[in-house]
Image (cartoon, rainbow, N blue to C red; front, top):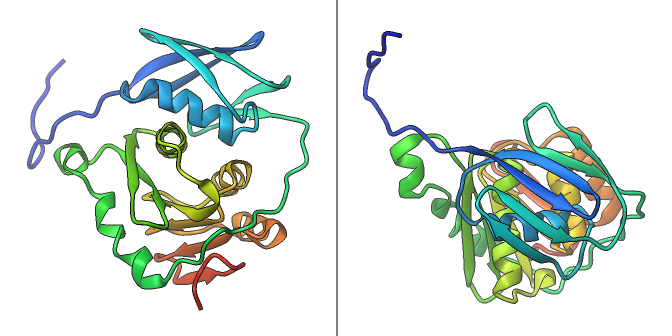
Length: 222
């Protein structure tokens, strides 16, 4: 095979196949091999499988305890998804964030790892005090799960925090926030119509800078 450069060459981003054994199910997903324990923790929380996740990671395999049964699915994006027979509860904000406070964190979406590769999505969970955790991954959903797993490990109060991500706000991302109890999701990218519908139905506030739209159900300071 002939390999040659086209323009300025960047580093190649990293991904590998990761297996999660959860209960009697096996989930396989492609992800960046960092913060794997936090990835699984966040995944269990945001898919409604556990409110207090217990995870062991050995190499490319994780074993996790779950609280309920579920069916697995693989989405077209390559992200793993689960179907749980559940009723989503409305989100109740524990704090109101000003737009100035929110906008101050947008620049933190572009880390050195992204500038070197242009390969990764970034997600942050930010507390009302300005403390934050940041994670990156080749997958948008994975980056969100890692950030939420890091925030859980650092004992963030999710009701007084918000999620900031580099990717689109889709219905799947919205449902992850609702399950975790995060009352506000913010992105520099677009928000999709079904995500807007879920925000209205379950009281999730959202800001999309690309779409030029804010939905306020109480988590944004008017």
